[in-house]
Image (spheres, rainbow, N blue to C red):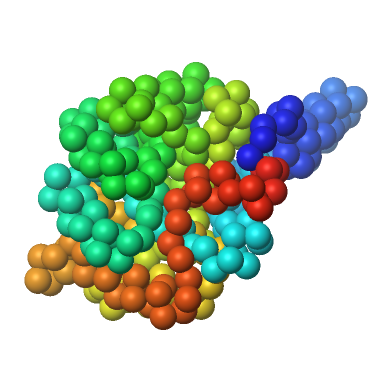
Length: 276
Ligand SMILES: [Zn+2]
């Protein structure tokens, strides 16, 4: 995926037009100030709502599915967030090894610092570690460019120090964003990656429900989201990902699909080198 010159997405151009229009209206016809204010409020609401939709592309490129060339080959991407976790990650690695499946772990920088041996085990098993932020604060989406830069660059440093790998993809906490993220990712030569579907396995205890959400309509090109960190527990106290993963991998195999890492997809010469 080659980075080209940063270009503001259409929604930001529309915002610029709204601001110019509203301020001009206010200056030339002050008695129309409620209309000018209304334009600005609606514009900011549109930006905020777009940032709350993890799969939206209104704030810049956002990988929600693998490219068509990968989909045609039956490739799918398992992405596993919020780890590494000393209880869950080793079991996840065992299951993935039994199925010879490769996954992408979106790790939290501070957890990598706390458990570097787990991060090393992930990489040694042929999986990829990508960037899920240094602190994973819920309110990260309220920060400006310097806050985003610190959160992402610190995690890059933590992950590189532990594993020697430099992440190429970033996934914000809960997928929440604002307009300042895209230029920061562009400057850091990174790409935003969200998902095709998720199982809500940090809060849904019912593994059947999580499995159904992930497997219904599953097809080549899908990016699935699961969690090894912050994993919900079933009524038998099993982390939901542990209960779901073998069945999900069985289904993937039955459908003739193959789980690969995100970076393997974009390193493949058949994948077009353009941003999503
Ligand atoms: Zn997360």
